[in-house]
Amino acid sequence: MAGWFQSWFGYGLGAGAARAIFGERRSEGSAERGPIRQQTEAEIRADEKRYDEDAKRLDAEDAAKKG
Image 1 (cartoon, rainbow, N blue to C red):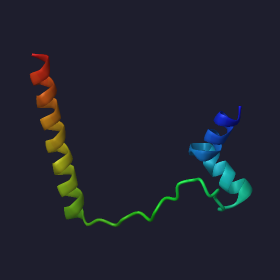
Image 2 (cartoon, helix red, strand yellow; image 1 turned 30 degrees about the vertical axis):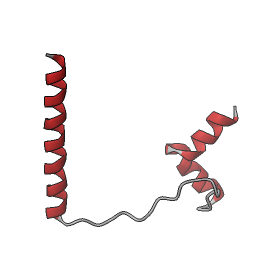
Image 3 (cartoon, helix red, strand yellow; image 1 turned 90 degrees about the vertical axis):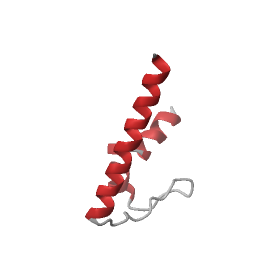
Image 4 (cartoon, helix red, strand yellow; image 1 turned 30 degrees about the horizontal axis):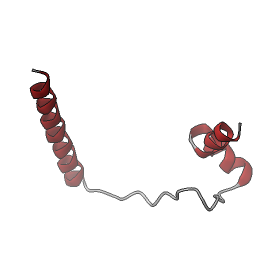
């Protein structure tokens, strides 16, 4: 029972409820999220282009394995 209860309070709606009920304090074992890194539009577009190229490469590799 503790497993699902702990998971529910660690993620999603449960995490929001836990913050509302218990405040912003987190347990020592929980992973802290760092600040969101700001990116320029050019960096975002370069990342998207790289992701698209990686997706095409992986698709081509999968097609080659299948046939």
